[in-house]
Length: 301
Image 1 (cartoon, one colour):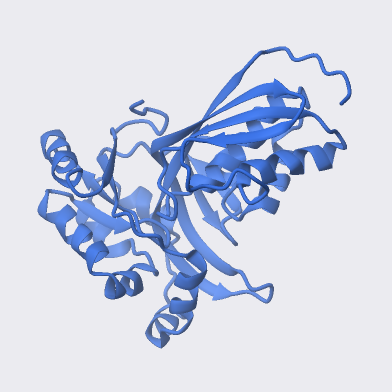
Image 2 (image 1 turned 180 degrees about the horizontal axis):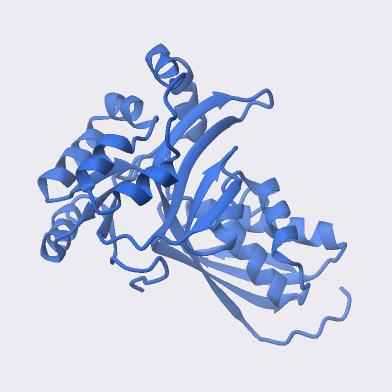
């Protein structure tokens, strides 16, 4: 291992979850991916990743179910950095996992992006954001989003991003019903559903960004105009997820939707008391997280 002067002994990075505010599946591409339109918005919970100097590259994780070898996106991100820069540095990576796996909240992608950020600092590589974004795309379609904070309008595979300010005036409650949904399987189900293909042919008039900015203070308009194309299929096939959405509205949510391909759902609450009551109610059965209203970077730790 070459000599490396580390300027710090440890670096920690918070890897936040995201929700999709609306998700339109536009068409299937020749490369097998789908063109989509969505809005990524940062929410709680977050994973925390610690990076320390070491002569070897290792990963430990608080979730024993997750792999800590080359199948983990943190290791993939680290090795991508090393390959791209032609280095063989080591690092001890410790992942404190809080974002549910397979819940449509982007936990693995967020961890990958945070690893690129953390090791770029630890190893003093000084790689610029544009280059990091190019590397991030090699790890996953939505990984580039997590290199920055806040809200982004996303098209293409989800990698063409336009960041914008969206200070949601709602308490956001996220429910994870402990059900793993494969994104690939969700796309397969979508492709097999003729009704949804027909609905998408002449669907797009305004962009999701335009709709959200127009209707942000009008939950009824959000409910009418903002849809997740995966949701009817997943809810039809899963009674528990369907129950969660109905229960969010019953608890006082003004707008509720599934995030990504599921299984997590979220609700927008205008009433703080109802929001905290919902957390108490749902936490008896499921994992529940709350994000306060305001600027995108205003989070509860």
